[in-house]
Structure formats: structure tokens, C-alpha cells
Image (cartoon, rainbow, N blue to C red; front, side, top):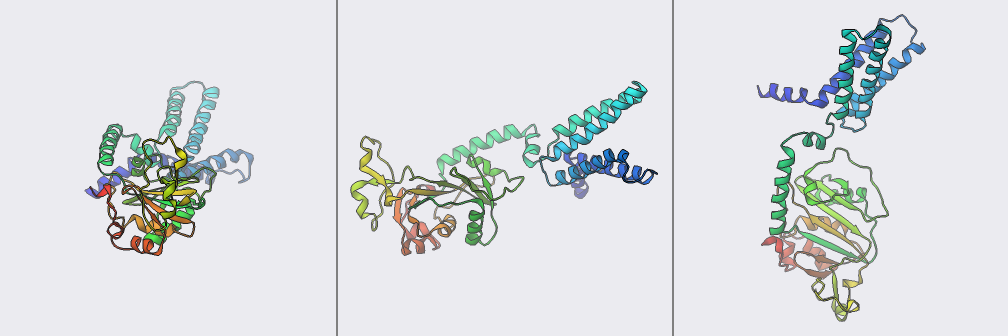
Length: 340
């Protein structure tokens, strides 16, 4: 019984009804062609070949959840409407032609509005918007109570990190593939999986990448300038190589020249573990987050800023060893707000 219910849920999906229509059109065109005496290359067959190609492309695109399949499906509906319009012109508005005309218009409208992607199917659910709003409120409250773990790499020069490079680094860190989505606007957006995986890209703008392999989601932000909260008093610059210091800017910044970027860094990469609909972001000892950080560490990294612990640490072999330990927070003596 459960199998039949699941089968009906699949078949009753709007998208699968359109796929069934496309397969029906393809089968009908094949039958017409087999029973026709016209030569295969006759110009009269060209519209039928176009309809077959459009129906085939629509079926494949709908199976892969491609948004462009909406347009090829509408093309099939429009061709059907054109055939009915010709019949009405030559035969008049008979009851059958009028019925077919109504069906053709409804078909075009249905094909245009049918949900194709995962997100469109979710939004088609009347109760989804309200459930989404309530979940966002819960996440926002949890986010305030338990800030997401964040580590910032302070760099001597910008690191041209793109989606493909981040995917390789994440796979080295965790031993399995991660997917990358450019431009994640907020932590709640991590609740959606992508409908299509974008090609690797390099952009002139600082990219923001969502790096996920459920249930872990990381927001990786690449900034070509110094991190705004990783500043220290100018007279502490010489002591940074050995002593950690706070990265917070003072409330009164009247004398901006007295504060300089920590370790003299000129760029930064921020890695934040995000909360999702499935779970809260819990990594108070940084054992999970630090795996990705260590894969991005190189000679350009001058130090790390642990945002939640408000602590700066210079890049060094002991730091890397601590990050690779089972409990980096304990090894580095971090007092982390995420552990509260």
C-alpha cells in the first residue's frame, strides 16, 4: 500500500503530468509518421519534426528540472493551439473545435505555470510560506542565542578562491564531495539544496560561496580588503608575532590611525558554520570547521581571527597542530560564545 501511495505521489505531480503529455505527443507523431506515405524529407513533415524535437527536449529538461523546459513545453501547447485555430478558420466554430480551443489555451496556461524546480514545488504548497516564516523566526532566535562558529583567515594578499577550488579543498578536508553554490544571501537559504550545480566561476566581485554536504553548511566569504573587526592598536603591532590579542575595534574610533589591521593583513576569508532547518550549527570546539581552515592555510595566511572567541592568533606550526587536534578550542584556550 505504501508503495502504491508513493507511486501515486510521483505520478500525480504536475511536472510528471507534463512529461506524460510530452511522451504522448512523441508517440502520436511516431504513429502518424509510420502510417504516412509521404517521403521522410518532405517539407510537410518539418513542423512535425520540430514538434517531436521540442517534446523530446521538454521531457528530458523536466526530468532534470531545467527551467528552460517550461518554454519548450509551452511551444508544444502553442503549436496545438495553432492547429485548432486553423480548424476553426476552415471548419468554423463547431462544438468540437471550440472544446479543443479551450483545452489548448488551458494547456498553454498550465505548462507555463507548472512547478519544475524543487523550490517552485515548495512555494506551490499553500502552507509553505507560513511554515517558512515560523521557521525563520525560530532560526533567528536560535542564531542570537548560539552564534555560528566563525574563523577568519587574515591574508597578506587576496586569495582568488573560486567554486572549483573550494570544492577541492572541502573534499580534501572531509574525504567526500561538497557542493558549492555562489551567492548565499542568508543562513536560512542553506535549507534549500540547489536545483542545478553552477559551473566554476571567477568574478571581480568578492564571491560568497555556500559549501555544503548535509548536514554541514559553510558560508565562505572572500574579501579583497582587511577584515573590519580584526584591528589592533598600532603600538601592539610588534608583539603580534608571539602574543594573541583581541580583534575588536573600540567603541570610540575618533583616532583611526591608532588602529591597524592585525598582522598587517590586506585580505581575508571568513568561514562560518551555518544553522539549517535540520540542525543548529554546533561546533564549539572547532573540530569540524578547522578541517576546512587548514586546507586553505598557506604562506599568504598571516594569522587567524576567531570571531566568537574574539581572539587573534598568528600563523605558526603550533597553531596548525592545534587546529588538527580533536579539540582545537581547548588546545588554543579559546573561550567561545558558541559553547554557551
